Length: 249
Image 1 (cartoon, rainbow, N blue to C red):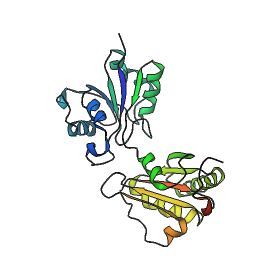
Image 2 (cartoon, rainbow, N blue to C red):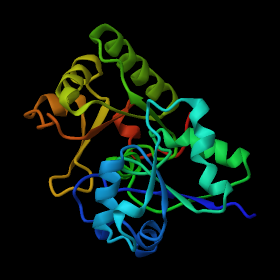
Image 3 (spheres, rainbow, N blue to C red):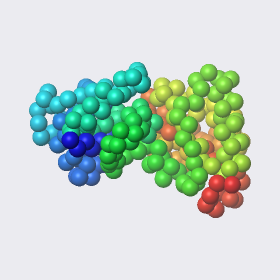
Image 4 (cartoon, one colour):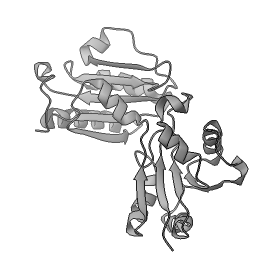
């Protein structure tokens, strides 16, 4: 029996209509499958309903893969693929495998000889980097920074130093209700000439993406970040070198 194909299905980053951010080819695949691996069944059902799935939503098969899934549970998630069924992984937002628990299952699929197909869709990390004007050839995503102040401040200083040394854009996120604390810490810890991009509500109607030096951010009212999904990007170094970013040093 031939194995099925594991499709990595991007999801919208919010309430944006899928047809605005997903190609029709991706929508067609997503609404044709019968088996899915998802972070939350409820939101995935809503997503597939919005795509006008070909079959009744209650007839579809959903298996959970989230931060609580243990490694010993992963092989069972691949069972439909080994039986010849195609399966789609759906993240809560954005692209599966990128800052997402789907990566471990994808790795296992490769080891089992299962074909993995990534589909085109929105990634807040990539879109923020594109719009920031920072170095897109040398960058690192760090996920969440420590939430406790002493460790968080040390991490910010370390990332700023590494950025200056390597000409590297540093990307990170925060739980939306702690965005404003992280923003204030960045303004306190970073050097005046360091560039900071704040990218909020990416792909949504209220999207805001701005790149300023730390001194410029301090000179203007703070952005409204509370409970709004945001990414933060840092690029340290001499400002006159800002437009000559071609590689890591």
